[in-house]
Length: 223
Image 1 (cartoon, helix red, strand yellow):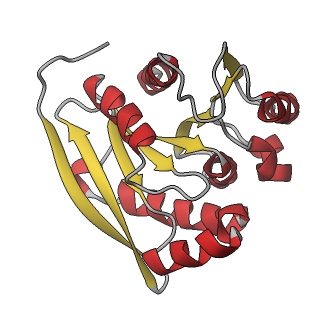
Image 2 (tube, helix red, strand yellow):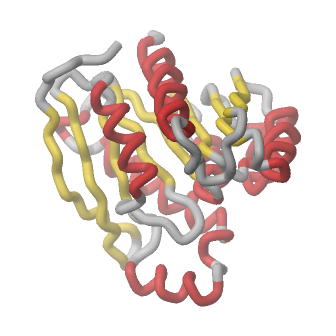
């Protein structure tokens, strides 16, 4: 699975969504089979060290990644004060849909499969967007996510979905179990024993990355 020593192209990108520009980092291995778009969670951004670590692990397995902000700098400032936008799931999902269409229009990405990696509230947005793009999104992984925030969209998701939750994140774990029970697609729940919401414990984030890598690699390999 791992492609040691392969070249990876790292590109800063800007995506126009309505009247705003959203900044991101596109990393594309030479032998990429697909691209995973990261939907960051509460108060996070493309600079998230946790998501950047996971992205690096995916890149090593010939999986492209796009870490992109769903909020502008000004919107992030407002959200830090109000926490309002991070819970506006339809708003975030619509931006993710536009970003996905932009990605598929890039010549160097033609024919590559698309997946979503959602963290915290970003997982809710990723699932809503996946429900809107059933023929495009091939796989979803949620890290400590809030799939319950996808509400009725859960039942329309067709992309195989993996939820990864810390064993000590009791409330979120129960929310994930309830949400997965409503979904009709291929789905799985992985509980990392001893891990909390942010997977800061020794080895926890590494396990998240390995599980995500295997899930995307498997789904992108399917015809």
